Structures are given as structure tokens and as C-alpha cells.
Length: 135
Image 1: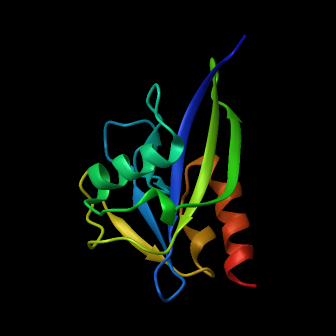
Image 2: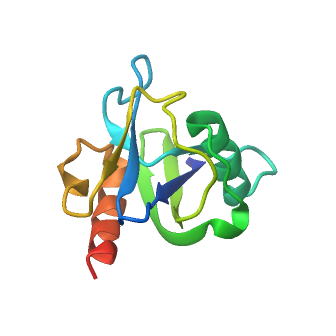
């Protein structure tokens, strides 16, 4: 039986329809690649609660769980563990996102979202998001 790794991710979408991406820092797996912000869901924690916590820790922004809308999910074999990652959309938060744990953060317009060198698990999510934002 394969262990499941539950990770929650968030597509922060600004008033111009751009999505925030964070660059993984040196020393972490897939360093230098871009991803949706988020992180591991701790024991006894909901994905929404994990995002509220992770977005505060990683970007210094405040989000309420009621502002997180489930959008899609990724499922990927990471070799020895299986990643299950729900992606939530968020259009309302307090504060300006800062790269506390990431090397950098950038806002990507829908037409540029797939141009970033994304972590493999985020690629299908980014493609779905791009299609959704272009409607």
C-alpha cells in the first residue's frame, strides 16, 4: 500500500485576473521551479485550514477559509508516496504577498501561466486554470 501525501495549493487571483506563482528555494526538491503556494496538510487539519496557515507563513497574507473555493486536484506518483493535491481559488486576502519561503513570487496573466517552468504536479492544474480564466 502506498502512503498518501496530502498537500493543499492555492491559486491567488488578483483583480486583473493574474495568478500568483512562487519559486521553490534552493535546497528544496525541485528548487528553482514555480508552483502554486501552499503546503502539507498536517494531521487533524483540513486542506482549507492548512492553506490559511501556509499562506500566512509563506507569503505573509491573511486568508479566511470561506474565501477558498475548491477548483481542481492533482494526483501523482512521487515514487514511494502518492501526492493528492487539491487546488483552491482565492480572490480575497489581506496583505501584499511577500516571498518569505520562496525565492521569488510573480503574477502571471492567463496567457503566460504555462510559460513558467512549473513543478510537474502543478502543470495540469495550471492548464485547467488557464482555460478557466480565459472563458
